Amino acid sequence: MTISIPYLMPILVERLNAEDLEGVEGLPDVMKPPVVQKPQVMTELVETSEEVRLVLAEIVTVIVSETVFDCLRAYIDVFVNVIRALCMDPYGAVITEGCNAMIEFCNNGSDQLLHFAENMARSLFTAFTNKHAKVRIAGLKALHQVLYCGIWKFNANIMEHMIGFRDPNLVPIRDFYEFTTKLNYFAMFVADRSTIVREFFYKTMASLMIKLPDKKDHEGRIFPYLISGLYDHNDDIKEAVFELLEEMGRHYEEEYEKDIRELKQLGFTPEWSFNGRVKDSDLILPLPFIHRPGMGARILVRSYVRRYLQAIYKEVTDWIQEHRERASHLLLCSIIYTEEFMTQYLDHLLVALYKGIGERENKAVMRNLPLCLKYLGRYCPPKAYGTLVLQAIRNELASFYPHTQQGALHSFGHLLAGTVEIFPKDESLERVEGLIDDFIRAVQSHVLDSLDTDLADSLTETLKNLSEMLALK
Image 1 (cartoon, rainbow, N blue to C red):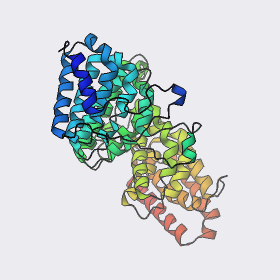
Image 2: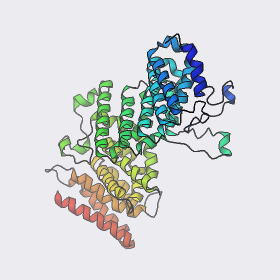
Image 3: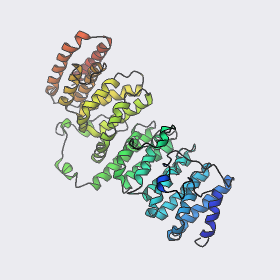
Image 4: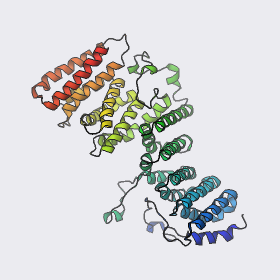
């Protein structure tokens, strides 16, 4: 095989038109245009037969998998171009075989392909947008292996391409003259029409977050998409993602055992659990949360929630229904994992929920936002949210909106219901008596005199929630 490589490579390059794929060979770096984030497809095909190109792809796979890499080192540039040309082929079967060749090449070359990792990853965009699920899965498998070649240096660039990120301070001159579109491939996989592809995507992301050496650099970008699996349309995927997050949490506990040793040994219990009197088995959580998330999973999610909460504040009231629905799902799951640590975000979060709680169009949002408020009431101290909500009811917020008072009035019932629901059977209501008294005084002094239909509906809903929960306890 080694002897035939010098004779095979020129033929492969010629038949696949794999020379200077981007037309920038020989140009100095300062003259090269910005790399393209959109999927590219080979159009000038020298070999027009799909069957022949498929055989050529199989030959490349055999060469890179069966040959010692020392014998391939002199031809790295050529092999990378040939494999990229296969992965950007218009025929799905050729793309699949090209992805297989890339996997074998990465396994064989490993970190010696460091400077080629970004270009190889960009050639997989064609597979990600292919109409066949088998091809998209092959692209994900190849991406998994490419990321092991670009660790510590080029993986950050690959991740930016995958999510369509661009530094707002670096705008190409071309953007002033032509309209450009950024593609978020991770978001495309989350919304993929194939159940098998979505499940494989979540498993791939979890595997990277467990085994990838530079995973810490990418967790913040991957976590929101991984958590998205908790509210997938398919129940099996929901359960699988929950277990994947639990597995990631267990690996975290093993990796940082010294850091969390005191928490385990001292048996720390949060305030909302009433010194451990509220057991994990007493908690009622929505599916797929069949039990309270483990400590490692909670710490992991908690570490990265702040990175996307600002986006949730905006999207939970977005004019596009799909955005509102996804944001409400993500917020609910984040609260369940973050628990009492959500207290530090209450000021801005509650203002966003005041507007969203009036949702009347999307049933998922109508179900999720009250649950978000209920779990915030469960995990956050009554004094923390009580002060903020009562200020909104009294119109004392610096950022006053027309919906603020009504939203706060509506939200108070869900918050207090969540607080009271978790009370142990032998616990009195003394903890919330002062808050209820303050609420009644705020309603009497600032709501009743300006009562209209909308405020009356919100007040009625809140009083109903309070009376039912207090009577239950």
